Structures are given as structure tokens and as C-alpha cells.
Length: 78
Image 1: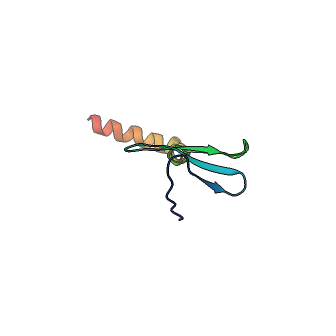
Image 2: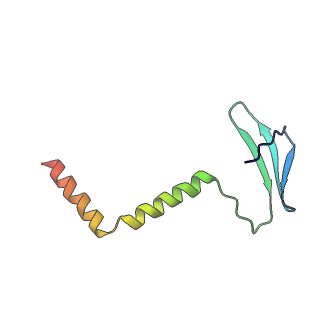
């Protein structure tokens, strides 16, 4: 991993066509501006991770799992 120190309005280049600019530095946050071609997807990691977890949960929540969950809930109610 490369670690670079930048001040407000300074930037880094990724390849020839992606620029990341530090637009604001606050007490607990850094605001970044990203210039990239429209075809380049820019996603926040936590959204990608949440999407992966949801996809995995959906894949494992088939009928057998749902049936087991119902049985466990019935036993718990007794």
C-alpha cells in the first residue's frame, strides 16, 4: 500500500486519466474529489461489502434454511 501525505487542494494521479484531489480536511473527515472518465465505476467500499453480504445471505436463504428458522422460532415460543 502506498501512503501519501497531501494538503487541501493537492492531488494524486492514478494512471493518465484519474485524479484524486483533497478538497477539504476536517477534524474527523477528509473530503476527496475524484476526476475520472464516466466509464470508470467509483464505489465506496462499505457499499460493495454490504452488497456482497446481502448477496450471500440471499443465496443461503433457500427453503430449507427458512424452514429450519421457522422450526427454531416455534421451539423458542414454547
